[in-house]
Length: 184
Image (cartoon, rainbow, N blue to C red):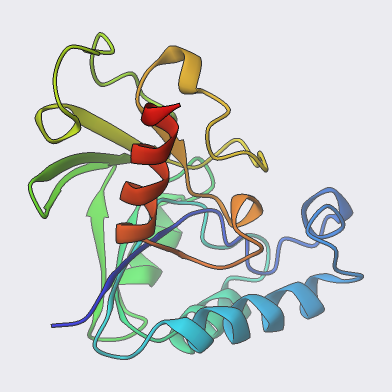
């Protein structure tokens, strides 16, 4: 059993400079290749990856080729750019790539995560309860660089490419970061 990684908003083939330039790339093709490289440096074929939407845009054939090259068993949640046509394409990329819906509950090491593309308030910020008795939202969509940008609204942690130097987050590292944030 491998590790669990969380990511969002690959935006493969999204040929708009407002996507790739803030990520420090000079072109969409450079971004595509570097995301694949960085992903495969840390994710093995035995690992599990949850992508929280917006996998590709514009060139679906090349976008599917990019996703095909990624290591791991990949589960995809729908984002705002994941049309029904793209959703069907994801299901046919590779046997171990599975579209799973618009939201998903993931339990890991006694913690409960609500995975979604959009930031979602999952509790009343129950500060009196221990972290393992609360629901943590892992999300994407906003293209922010600070994973805690919505922390004032609740237990919301952003996982888009922009928050982690175009690398997926190891779920255990997310737990550690949240624990440290709560200890402050």
